[in-house]
Image 1 (spheres, rainbow, N blue to C red):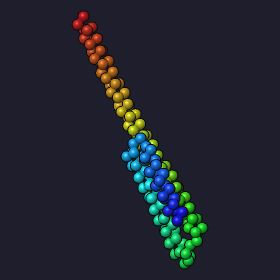
Image 2 (cartoon, one colour):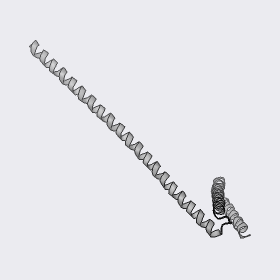
Image 3 (cartoon, rainbow, N blue to C red):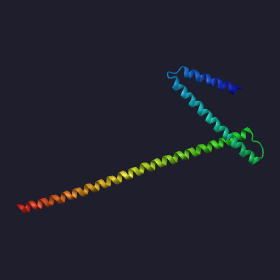
Image 4 (cartoon, rainbow, N blue to C red):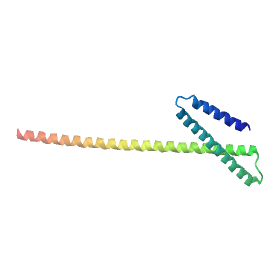
Length: 139
């Protein structure tokens, strides 16, 4: 019964928030998103508890206690945090590899530009020598 009262209190607080907002439509949309996130989190937790209960019951042949369920869900949450950290690390590694590849490509382009400039300078030097040689012969 207290859970129903808590939900009613949350609804009243949400209504007061929307009624007092400068943009009630935006506030209502935000409240709906918050409620949806809460429902999703509750659904996920309930699904985790059900899976943990099934695993414990299959392993022991008896219904799990609340403490066993909480411990199993805690281990699952810890594993989820570890997976999230690994995934985050992989994403960071992929970004760093992409940045390094772009830097290598930029460096390669810069080397090619320098080589082109060197070839142009050599061609200009040859032209200058030819012009100087022809000028001396003409004189």
